[in-house]
Image (cartoon, rainbow, N blue to C red; front, side, top):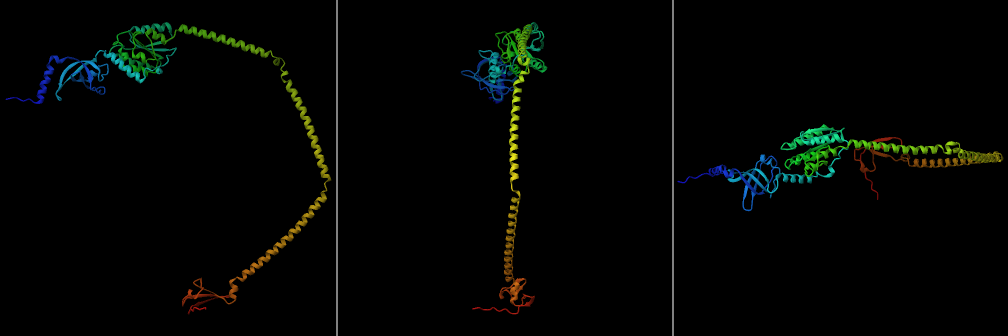
Amino acid sequence: MEQYLTVSQLTKYIARKFEYDPYLERVYLKGEISNYNPRRKGLHQYFNLKDEQSIISVVLFAGTARQIKFNPEDGMSVMVSGRVSVYERGGNYQMIIDSMQPDGIGALYLAYEQIKEKLTKEGLFDDSLKQMIPKYPKRIGVITSRSGAVIQDILTTVKRRFPIAEVVLFPTVVQGEQSADSIVQNLKRAEAKGDIDVIIIGRGGGSFEDLFSFNEEKVVRAIANAQTPIISSVGHETDTTLTDLVADLRAPTPTAAAELAVPVLSEEILKLEEYEQRIVRAFNTKLRYLTSQLTKVTDSVIFRQPARLYDGYLQNVDQLETKLLNEMQLFLKDYKQTVQLMEQRVKSFPLKSFVYEKKTALDYSLQKLEGAFDHYLKEKNFRLTQAIQGLDHLSPLKILKRGYAVVESNESLIYSVKDVDKGDAIDIQLMDGKIEATVGETFVERRD
């Protein structure tokens, strides 16, 4: 009778075959990356490798991914090594890779180009970001190996050219896996000191791989963010690293870096002496010119005979004084004549007859005013008397004297027999008093 296996049993059997097959323990493949969707750093990556006829699933664990220097991309031709295994849950076989490099180009060179393209787009290499190198630095920081020839070349050059400058070495690992972190760490140390005027980052020549730590993105960004001006001198003159591109100044050799960092002290002293001589010559020339000007002024007629400066003004003052006196005399003469004329007019004026005439006119005006006022009062008194008589004729008391009466009920006047009823109390107001009565009967009088 046939024995049936479960799917899991069969899958496990196939997986064991894969694991123990010596030809599948170490496989070298070449193919094109496809279906690559990069996840964030620190996670495993899953994609495919394919050629014209076949495709295989690939697993790139996070630990292996951190060792790869370039960024995989869809369509990139790569060479990988690893082992073939079976993913039991899905029942499909896959390749777990432990190394990967571009096909036909070095991984480090590809990583260099990718980082360079990325940072160029961000503008980290723009000339507008470059800082000026100070002309007379007091302290020069050097980030390089303690034992290399770089520091010796820099020390010798600085001592020869500008011995008053101090060189501060920050011993740095410049090759290997720890070199990038060492460069970044020492750059931060140099910045933290706060008294470093310029920093030289350098190392001697080497292969592209030996110099690659100076192409690391973390190193390039640290240099770009530095506040202190930086001179880069990495490798030989023909080598160009990203550190050279991002630094404020690039030197082909460590000696050249030191020469760019400091001037020649003896030359600067000669320049100062030349400037001093030029200043003295210029000062003497200026002094001679001003002395000649002073001599010219002091020898002038005005300084020898200063009184001549006021001759013209004194004459003007005399003329103005004479003119003022003449005008004052004419004014006083005219004013005196005017006063005399007024006195004559006052003396010849008939003052008494003028006063008598005005008094007579005033008395006549007073008489006319009194007569007009008496006439006005008489007219007003006559009109008042007429008004009083008119009011007296209209007085209710006059009417009551002729036999009429005023009848009220509840303080309201009664105008008709319809205003009262039988038994109502009424008040009858007569000329000399009031009668209180009660209505007995009412009769309506007809008038044809």
